[in-house]
Amino acid sequence: MVVGNWKMYVEAPDAAKKFATSLRKKARSFAGAEAWLAPAFPLISPVAVDLKGSAIKVGAQAISVHAEGAHTGEVSAKMLKNIGVSFAIIGHSERRAAGESDELIREQLTAALGAGLTAILCVGEDERLPDGSHFAQIANQIHRALQGVVPMGRLVVAYEPVWAIGKQAADAMQGEDLEETAIFIRKILSEALGRDAVSRVPILYGGSVEPANAQTLMKEGGVNGFLVGHASADIDSFIEILKACKK
Ligand code: PGA
Image (cartoon, rainbow, N blue to C red; front, side, top):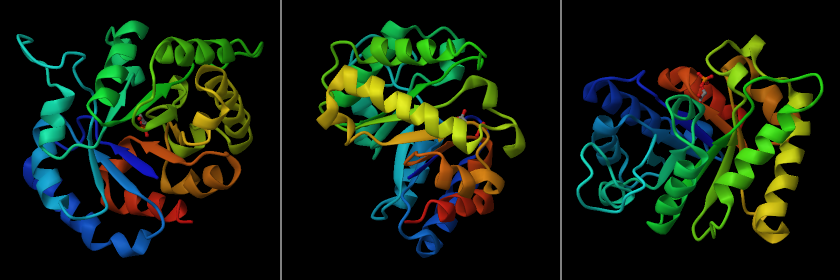
């Protein structure tokens, strides 16, 4: 699976719809890989309308922890579900940097799963340290996010090392390092959720995935797909990455 995190890159409904229509038309070229798209809030509806009836999933980049009521500026999981959203990205490092705490991330996870959305939980170290202490940061993020959370719906974990985000393929993580981290994440998840549950949790990699490194990372990295930022806003790049993930 390849999840496109559009961030604020795609700005206008026309551009979003053009992208969605084109992706849908070319879906046969990446058959065997699942395409998921997370537009910014105002673009979710136009994209969802365009993709209705297709296998391409539409999601949100964030959700409110609140289910309803007096919360100005917030958007609930239920409101999103009502317009065709099936997943939400939770705990992205750009939102953690903007002040989201582990507790808030746990509450968002509970809200998403409770509303029947798939939750994509993002974790990842700020820096890769020679003493390996970045592994503790990843483990803490996972344990804190999943504490007391019963994964009622589907959970996906996206490993996104902060230092590798928003660069070019050459500066992204290498396959070997990714494989080692993916194994570590599976171990931590099985401590948190039990071994049976973990086999059902896809693990994605995110951080400068581009057509130039997608194939190698897929072959060597031991992950089930990618969470793609800047390269997902370009239709040709996104399709090339999807093709690299075909079974
Ligand atoms: P990037 O972003 O592909 O532009 O590095 C990935 C992400 O932040 O999800």
